[in-house]
Length: 255
Image 1 (cartoon, rainbow, N blue to C red):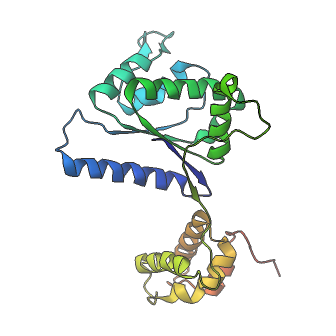
Image 2: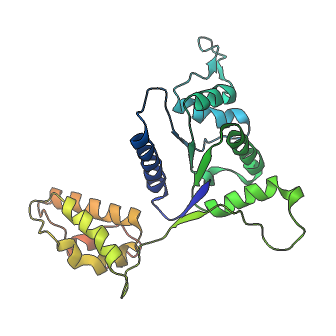
Image 3: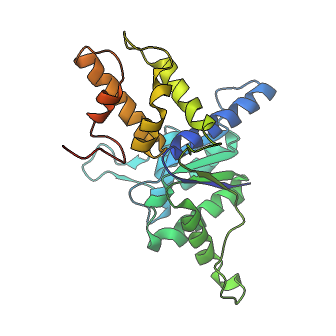
């Protein structure tokens, strides 16, 4: 089964965690060997107009040399699809993680999903697509490929792939615990001399207002405030220190 990861910041982290967890489960059932590569992870390449462009990040993952005439000034890359498929089959790859699916241009969608479909058909792969707007991108890609088979209807085509959506962490009455769990993790990992355990929980409303519940913004805000606390030797995160940071989705107005 294939699936999608869509939503706000944290998609790559979740994608990698799924890959590690999947491989970990397999390793409990068998002894890994040097040839076994159950999970392959790639980023969408900056150019992807042909099979060659898609095959190169896969070849890089397996450490393959994909250049010809490398000793001459005219060296170039070559399509590595067949060697990659051979290696993935020999290493019993069963999960392909594709990150940055939002970098596929609209004009390249059909070719991209033809390529992914070919890999799945030849290798019996599950694919997880991750990226901002991945749901619409994959739906459009599948719609373009299946246009001739699509029933004549005005309803928008939607794929049957399950979607794991990452949303900002809420913080309102009855739903505070998720945000507090995140802050406790940050709090326990702070290494400031004058940090009092649990003090980030006293700033929970301020932190949520500044970040909107987005993990990437929270990470930047806490890390930069902690770095400043080290430099100015206050060695603690306070509301005043947070207010001095130009990080966040609701920065305070200048006085």
